[in-house]
Image (cartoon, rainbow, N blue to C red; front, side, top):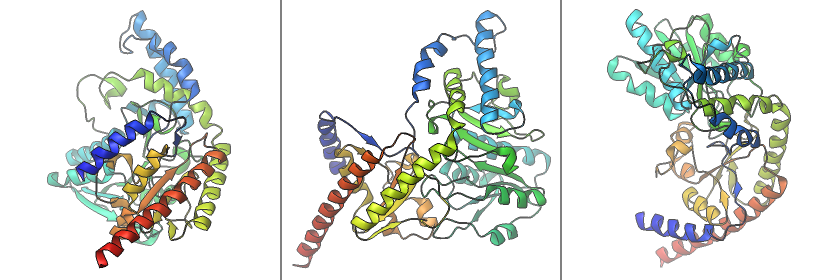
Length: 411
């Protein structure tokens, strides 16, 4: 396996030297910085003072951060800018909500020790909850169907007065399935249970609003919406309490200590202008995705679109390509200058199939034949056509190789 990877890396490096155009279809992993961000980065870099300083060098950065907090709060439809907490990424945001809530109840009401999440949450949710089990946390998992959907009756029956927090993602980073967050949060609120949604994948793809959802907490990340890596956001509804994960300074009103990444914060705030037109972007991506899926299904045999009938993000398509290893498929497409994924980026390098796909009832073999495609705001029809043509050629070739190997094994 290591030899294969080494040969691939060398071949990939030599191939990339000949590259003219790389078509990027992995926007759920990260997005390229928007032109608006690139144009203003140098301007923001000039404000190098510490926002916590009260002298002149600190006032400029402080004002920039205050304005960014206002723009971001409006972008996610919060009721007050002070409900926005800056972190370093989506994973830290999820950790802050889960650990911060558990720590609060651990001190004030230790009987409230149950943490609930869906079976297809991001590892930063599931693994964080599991990591709290030695301290007395009881983790319960909400099952999902093969289409990635939750049975509301099953969910409601899991809730009781011992539950401290429910965490359900707004949309799956792998299948693209969109969850009914408003309904789920309402059920939790009726039972006086705190509700958190990991909305990292939703921002910039669908209209959203934390006040509309009526959630207690929500997580976001700048690099998923054409800003820069290094800025995560926690929405914490006024009146909720989170124990800080980092002790030290008093930044973010003591809820997240540490000097803020002003450059990444400013970049995310800049993207609030673009997010205002998310409906038009959504419609464009959805039309292209549907066109791509129709071509794939009509031109390549034995392909399944995971959760095709469910409500999905407009840019996301997860395929099961029978008879082909997803990893091998990815490598071959990469050599043809197409960037795609076989699962979440946080699991890259892991030979095991996606835990989320397995939790949906997809078999081990099917999950290992999966391919995730995630379009961006600027993806074009021409790029989609080039991709489908390349995918078709690669699949045909790899299936022929697989058939020849099977034939050799029978001789």
